Every structure is written in C-alpha cells, then in structure tokens.
Length: 122
Picture 1: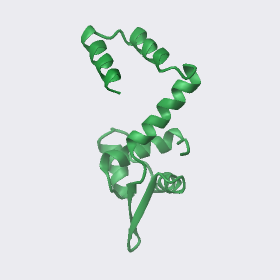
Picture 2: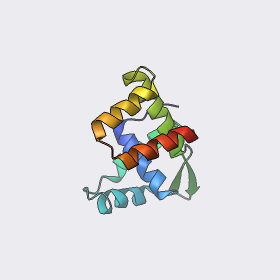
Picture 3: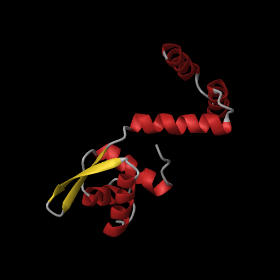
C-alpha cells in the first residue's frame, strides 16, 4: 500500500466519512463542513483520480458522472501509518510510543487505565 500525500489523505478522509460520493459532494464537504473556500472541481478531481491510481478508491460510472467509493478501509491505512510512525520514530517499539503519549499528553488516571485495558485486550 502506497503512502498518500497530505492533500490525498485529506480527500481520502472525506471519502471515508461520506462513503460513496461525487466530486461535487467532496467539494461541498470541504466548503460547508470544514469551512474552507470551495476548491476547484479540477483540483479535487485530480486528487481523486490519483487516489484511484494508487488503489485507494474506485468508481461507478453513471454516464459522464463518477461516484467514488473507498477500496481501502480507514483502519487498514491507519495501521500502516501507525506502524510506519512506530518504526521511524520509536525504533519499532510500541512501548516507547505509549510512553511518549503518556508523557506528552498528560493522561488522566482514567484514560491511562482505559489504555492499559485496551492494550491487554489486544
């Protein structure tokens, strides 16, 4: 699985949120939900086609209109990114990552207990 650019990842996050959608739906989401200026249709379309080339999305054609949908689950991409983060910044050690999070985020006792419980489940 390839790594996404920041712009591709932002579009992919929207597709995961919306599910099957048109480029117009993505543009509206960016404008209405994220409060950003409406991006040009061509820009979003180019990013979605790039995601399709990388195997992250596919489409159904309805005449000249394409409806895009995710092929890669958000959880699968999240695991890949987390494993890359752990490998590159924490010498492959989840323990170091968790220790870093605990130190940097000033977790409450309740949050720490929940984290420990979750780790024991895995």
